[in-house]
Image (cartoon, rainbow, N blue to C red; front, top):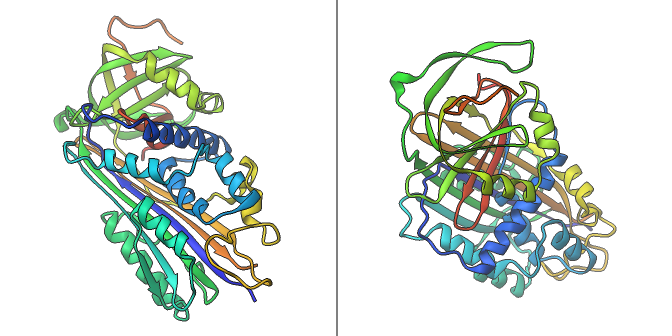
Length: 397
């Protein structure tokens, strides 16, 4: 007999910018761990087309998953996600800091355990997620998979302002499903200085060195800028002072692949440190990256946690007391992200779901950062250093 459970995490965000909130050391350490994992994951993903992910969403999902893991499975999760200790207390600190009432933004974080009716979870697992992640428990009738899936997706959609409409796809909930762990985040804000709509115009964007198309392009200015490693960096703050979007524009039209190939958390931290007060002219296309699911299992296997996906080796015995013939294992991990940038600000959403079953030119005097070819972007919480979202735009149309 085999059992199953599923894990899901979702993040939705539109950012504001504030600097006054102190960040506990453990929370900052968890943010650094999430960033290290995020850039390692990014390096494993395909590069074709527009792409966005939320490293924090995936990290949150597996922080909760790791609570139920034991032995080598738990060790591999800790290694891949750079967890020095059980992340529950630090996650709580980080979430509390991100949701601090003093921040002039809209940020909501919600967690939930959806369990199969009649399947007994270990009290320590349920209590640990309730205490560390504020995740209440709710039972579902998985004998009616379509209704159970609809209930979970409805819960996620409501908490992401309708940007993630189908976190759990058809077939992800079956009569064998035993648990679905969901993390949902919504974060909304506006630019510190809005782009003036009357300055938006059609301008050429070059997806490749030989192609060109007209796209709606916003025009404005930035007050923090750097040029390092053949990349122009501008920091666009959101209201409040702590959350920013960093645009990374390679000098070469076809330079995005090289930019990303050498990018890791240490390099990104060096980039952030290089950004200094400096006026720069900025031209940035409006863009909207629709949510599309990415299968993360191959990347997570390659990063060093294969046992979680192997029905013969996975050890999630801390979740429930099973019969000797039963074993829980992760059968799927899907991630989807939505990002929209316009004159007012940024709105983004991301979701992660894991199903677990029982079987260069000379510079001008004023730098000009004209994003008329593929570029990368990062949405960063300044007090913690946490990269909430990262992505690249190869075609804003």
